[in-house]
Length: 322
Image 1 (cartoon, rainbow, N blue to C red):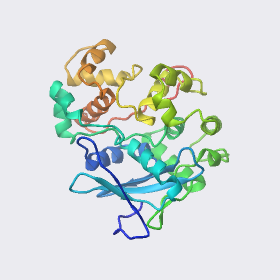
Image 2 (tube, rainbow, N blue to C red):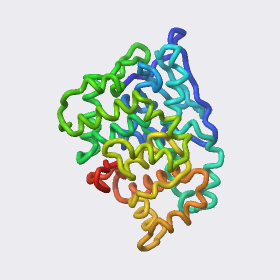
Image 3 (tube, rainbow, N blue to C red):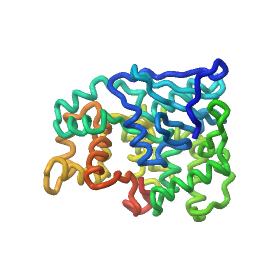
Image 4 (tube, rainbow, N blue to C red):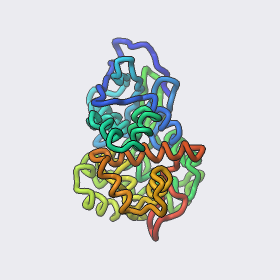
C-alpha cells in the first residue's frame, strides 16, 4: 500500500468535497473488514489506497486518500492527466461520495434504529466495489471459498496480471484489466470452471456490457435482466453487483434473506419478510441501500464480527454467491 507522503509539485493533489456527513475513518473500518471489496490497495492508519482498472481505458490508476479536519477528502495519484478525472470519479463512487448525503441524517431522525446505527458508525456510507466488472469477477472468485481466501486469490491475480500504477512512485498492484484477465490459464484456488467464467466476464466487459455508469442509469429491472444474461449470474448475484458494484444508493435487493434476518433482530419482528422490509424502508428513501448496509454492519457487530456480504452456497441453479 502506498504510504502518505508530503505533497510535492510533481504529484498533483486531488480533492473530493463530501456533500453531507462523511467519515473516511468509518469507511476504513468497513473496508478493512471486507478487504476483497475495495479492489487493489489497502487500508492504513489514516488513509485508504485504491488501485483499479479505469473503465473505458486500457490503464489502471492508484489513489491514496485521506480526510482533513475540514472534512474534505484529499489525495494523491500519479495517474496520467488523461485518465485522472475518470479515476477520481470511480474512487468517489467506490466510497459513495458521488451521492449527495445531506439528507442521510434525516433518515436516522425518521427511524430511531437507523439513527442509533448512524451514531454508532459515524454516518457510515457503503464502500463499494470499484466497478461492476470487479464486483462480478469477485463473485466468481469467491464462490465456495472463505472471504479472506478470495482476497488472497485477488491479490495473487493482481501481482501476476495486474498493472502497477503508482502513488508518489510507489507501485500498487491493481486487479487485472479485462484484456489481461483473458491471459489467465490457471491459478491456485481457481478451478477450470471459474477460469472459464472469468474469461466470459472479461469479454463482457470488453464488449461494454459491464459499463458501471450505464448499468446504474438503467431502470433496475433492465439492469438486473442484462446482468442475468451473463453465465452463472442469477438474481442474488445480479442484485449484489447492481447495488454494490454500481454504487446505487436507493433500492432494496429483494433476493437477500440476510436483510430480513437483520430486520428481525434489530426491529424485534419475528419471521420478518419482504413486506416488513419494504414497510420499514419507506422511511429510508432515498438512501435505502445505505440503510441496509448500515444496519447489516451494526447487526454484525452485535453478532461479534463483521457481516459477510457473500453466501458460500448458490442461491439457485446457476447463481453465484454475492
